[in-house]
Length: 113
Image 1 (cartoon, helix red, strand yellow):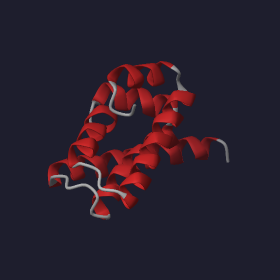
Image 2: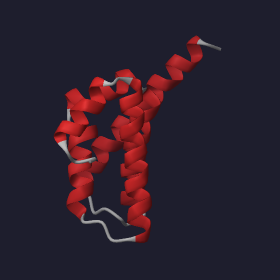
Image 3: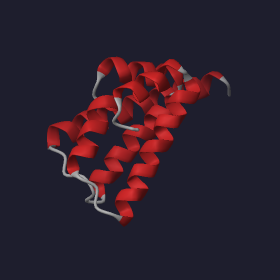
């Protein structure tokens, strides 16, 4: 489901709950990759469809910043654990997205403390 564009679009249209579901699927994929071999293209496509696609990333981050941050975190984790061989340019983009997501969450949190 994670790589299916129709599923992705349906999840995005559901707002916060849909973003959470995408996040959970990403976590499950990393868990699956920890016990079985997952082809590199699966991670490539997940990164392209959810984190690197600016329109999708913006919608996910607006709907649920924590869920978006988890999506990016899981991709970075997969690379760090040797589950995904991503090029350095992609990893740099993901690190920037993670930092930006973290900054946004801290700003929101500071509004309530």
